[in-house]
Amino acid sequence: MRKLLCVLLMWPLIAGAAEGPPVDAAPDLSNNPAALQRGAKLFVNYCLGCHSAASMRYNRLRDIGLTEAEIKENLLFATDRVGDTMKVAMDPVDAKAWFGTAPPDLSVMARAKSPDYIYTYLRSYYRDTSRPTGWNNVVYPNTAMPNPLWQLQGVRDAVFVDHENPENPGEKEHRLDHFVQVTQGTLGPVDYDIAVADLTAFMNYMAEPSKEQRHRLGVWVLLFLAGFFVITWRLNAAFWKDVT
Image 1 (cartoon, rainbow, N blue to C red):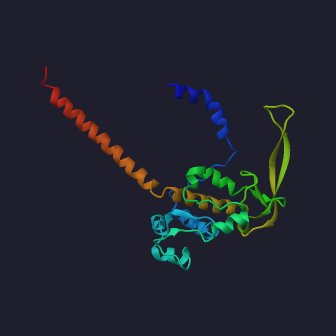
Image 2 (image 1 turned 90 degrees about the horizontal axis):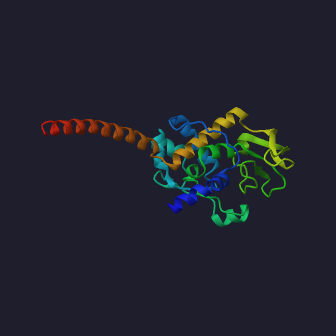
Image 3 (image 1 turned 180 degrees about the vertical axis):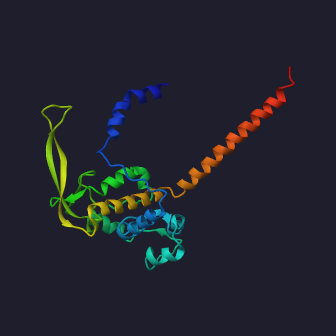
């Protein structure tokens, strides 16, 4: 009881600490195999060079409609096999020297951060010459990772303006006003958002590949329990009807 009371009293502080920058809702593409396949290709080409996904095996990509031949031809590096996990190509020691920290494993990043966060993060990069990598991010200020998709998105500058904090009159907040496209990438803004949505969907699938199967199984379990309840209810009524 005391623990529950402490949690309730401290909930406003906990909730305030959990709040972060506003994020956009990621499109739900969990039941779109084509989007998941495109996302897998983006992940292998743009993420797997630095980040590992040690809990994910290439052969699980068959669950999203890819054949073993397609996996070998389009997604595997020369030394990889279909049954291998998605190992990182970069040496952790080199990564720490170049970026200041070793890139984290992305196997369950979508569960840790949420698809909405990833979708917004990958669309919030801008050029910042004051940073060692030349990049910064509105969602994660002073991020150590440069924009991995800059060739697709192009280079953008961020325009910030000062807004008065409504909770503390007289205090100014430095907020993003808009982005300015400096150089165009290989994708336009709309196509880039679609590509990021595909990548986010794949990372969400990768965090729990059996999620859809579990949901389908859960429906059948609930239907079975509902039917079993009806049977036991009628059986109980038949058993007790002659008992005075």
